[in-house]
Length: 213
Image (tube, rainbow, N blue to C red; front, side):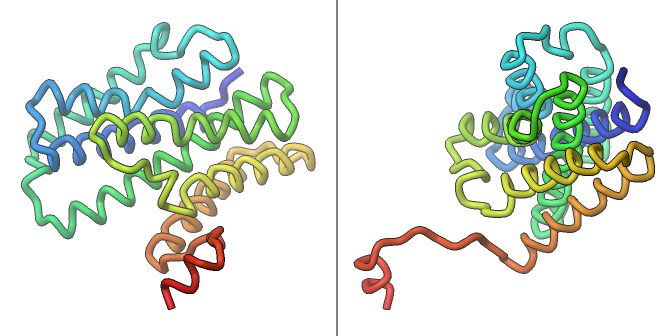
């Protein structure tokens, strides 16, 4: 059974990824249909890939909530002409929205995996796919290098959140408060890592290191 906190996280993630898709579409100067398609795929792409992996009917085919959230978010963004705001502010908004979607979908994916009694690896995989799948589709559609390939603490955050969720459940932490605390931890980690430009160690050969010197 999906608890209320997970439903809210799912809808929050959907709205956040809708905004990130909308902003990228506007930046690339797509027409209205192009922006809608990009926002839609960003918001539901990860969930659909996850559902196919576990051989379930994609949630968006049986639940109207995601579509209502997506089109309501798009309508509000269009009404306030969000795409016409200061570019510096839009860049920050994109990072925040994308980070919220990443963490929210990581928890949602981990929750589904736990309901299916998957092991730690399964929990991490479903959380990871749910969190990064939509962004991966979005970036590939606009010919950008996917975030997951150049933002070191992007996919890592999804895995860390999934592991924390898994071990917390093993310790009996099932309260709604803990879910929101985990959401806050994951979001803080992602934003701090981005703004401070934190990264994992690079794998380079000696010749590349010498050339840079």
